[in-house]
Length: 400
Image 1: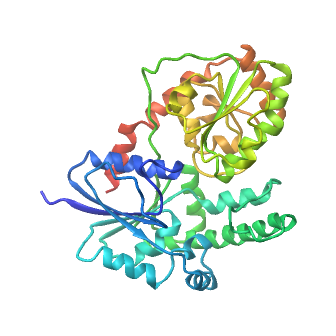
Image 2 (image 1 turned 60 degrees about the vertical axis):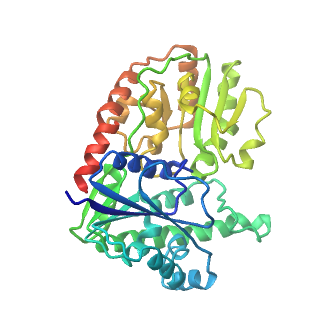
Image 3 (image 1 turned 45 degrees about the vertical axis):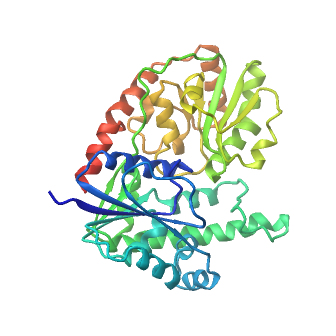
């Protein structure tokens, strides 16, 4: 039987995954590694050569690109989002053309909007645009929040007093240009993937096309036999602690929510676990009851030992994988409507609070043992029935 050839284009460090999106892509690659009828080529576009290797028998092509300011400006003048303009231009296209010379593909999958233009320049019988979630929606929520906006090194040359203003201007452009790009680019692909039914519905309202848009979830590792050593009065939040929405949540808890909880539960402990911890978070590492852990050897064991997972968000989009992971470990999860978005039957699985005061009171009740925890079982069942490896693998293979 002739194998189907699949090209996957990404800009993420996948092995090990650098963030939540990279985790999703790497898990899909793990699924595909169990199906020998597919021949997989990964085109990985990076600023430097990755020292990590692909653990699967795939063709792995690493393209090293240098940011070309003139090509970026040209892309911006065409109204393209900044994150798309970074990968826009003849130089990178020629590098890719040379790297893929002689290769032919049945299926092409582009990872997120930023690689869509690259995908359009490559021949394939069937094209899939894997958007993950609608970043434009996340950016608009971030703009509407009152939190300080940081875009990393982009506004570094501005005086401090102007940095937030400059960052908001950039983010506003990115939000609206990306919304237009998301709407337009769908027409050039046979299938578009998003992480949740809610994201699918939002995009379908925007587009005037019959192109197919469907949800494809990430699968969750289910630790059925993980020994539980629940520690009293322990609250956990985890993830990549350099991404904007996670940094904002961490600071929200550190500055407002946890201090109010600790006044009522004196021995309460708040654990922040993850990698690439933002400096604005590290300044709290010596505060009473706060533990900041980087590069934890066994993150699942750390989470499983917690009394509760506290994960409210002031902005974000798509399904929050960290919430599903906590649900799979049978830990009560306190969140808000943004955090609960996309999770089936969320009202019966999560402790959803509309205000900061509600979150604080609910957390105190759980820590004191006065809260009914009957939602934990339902939450676990949802993960098993909707987000297990088998369920997601069957859906992925069905679309290829």
